[in-house]
Length: 282
Image (cartoon, rainbow, N blue to C red; front, side, top):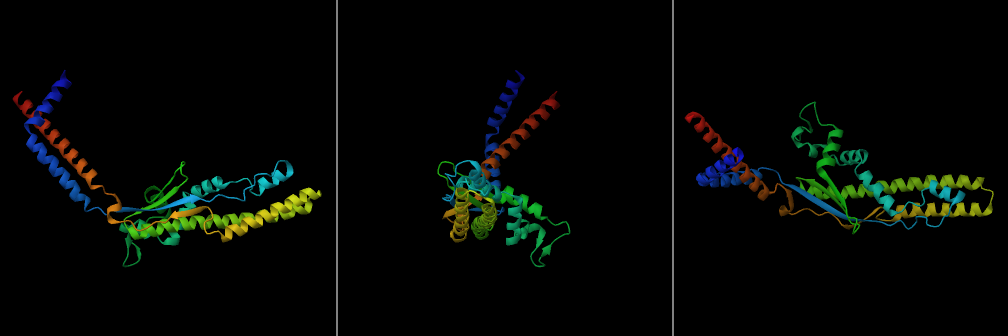
């Protein structure tokens, strides 16, 4: 019963002070929208990719000693495995840290702590690379993997829309380049391993099969060097976002929340005033 009475009292107060509430809601919305103009807009530059299918993956190596050798040198790892490895690397602290250092991004990530005129940090307690990596992974880098279409979206969110577009393309290039170098190094190690195993093999058929694996490793190394897209094919590179493409602040959303906040504040004020009057009368 008390809760019903309190609710009815609030409704009556709101109706009685509807003009005040309307003005407060309008003022709160306008104030919130006005504040949104003081916030630097954040833009997202996005590049769209498709994973490259690895035609060199082994599908008929059989079992036994040759199958074991094929597994040791990396056969049977299809394009999906390579794509997943690349996406895991994209989120790794090592990769992101290298990217931040290569592009000199620390001043861009922590502009309030950086003195551009002196080219140094404002204090000795400057942000660390680990701080930059954490900020980059949590607020700057975004990506999604559409399991239906296979399209991968990699985006960079920053207040500088030109830099965002440049970094979105650059991080994909670095990822593909790093995966290419890893694949070349692995192919060379596998080739050397197979060459050593061929010297130990006594059966002619086994030795010929090992030679075939060695040729495949040479082919993998060659393809990794000449293919423009090793892990991902860029189907739509990032471009500079338009001013209307900002992801935040959302002025309409801020206006709505500003109006709601103003409404709640006025209701609390009116209820408090009624309670004080009731206490005085009592």
